[in-house]
Length: 274
Length: 93
Image 1: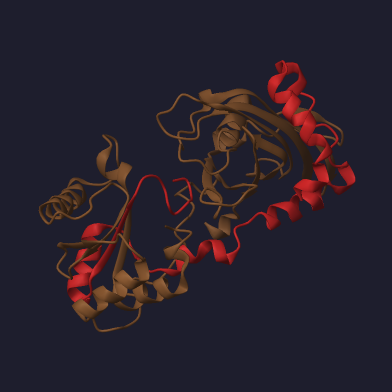
Image 2: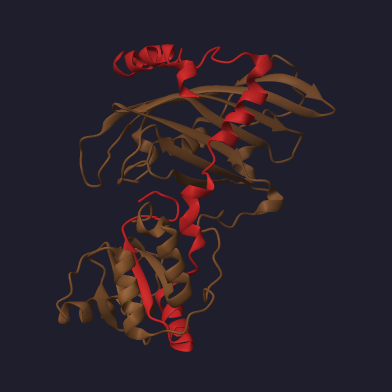
């Protein structure tokens, strides 16, 4: 729905003008360790029970229309724009600006001042329902982590070293295209390596190239066991000065999951932007 | 960008099915030292989501159901509640 109706400017306009919009991740509300507090879970359960009572077309992935006092009224089953316009006609809200200002929905998680926050963008080299918009991840490396990917002491051009395997695994485990399964545990990784070589040292600033690869198994659908092989070639650039958080950029030069090529880019989020 | 490396696709596919030692040779010398910094910077920029992939962000989303109900009562508006498996905001869904 994100790539379809929720990217349609007419739908966006109706939602902003006449509705209060909210989305939730079911796992936050239904899983044991989910982040939704009890009263949030209770509200969703109430809406579900009301929907069952009204014999609406229930399911876990649904667009609900609730009354202005929060009761289940309808579930979007047909063309979304027409449904929303019909709801506007029924409820007759006073049109206006969005009651919540639009804002980026994929944002960096909280991190300490000396942490390195990486933003990863992954996209299947195809189109269709699984590649209409890219997938993103945010990876935070605390000081104790990034100290394990830069060498201690002075370095010279030509010097090489390997990134700590545990830290590089925490980055590379997200090197997979858009799939319904997003269980990104590092035990999927069979082989991986990120290796750096100093190119220049200028006024204390070290610039190093990074080369590496990844081999792992990744399942497309959750709960399945039919993992497909995934391989990626990676290059990048690591820039750092002594005892300061480094900047890391990585890109795939070749990457494939099963028969599906994909691309990944990782950049370091500037601390001012966090 | 991928087409520049098409000849290496065969190597990648072979490496996926051959013993692990093959994989360790993949990433050598794909781009020269002289070009690597600019190339990586350019490629990272090219792979950022364009605005048309971020129209979802143009909708004003309430942070949770309780807040949405509170705002809906205040503004006398119906609520659109979308329930989804996974993280629709990051595309990992």
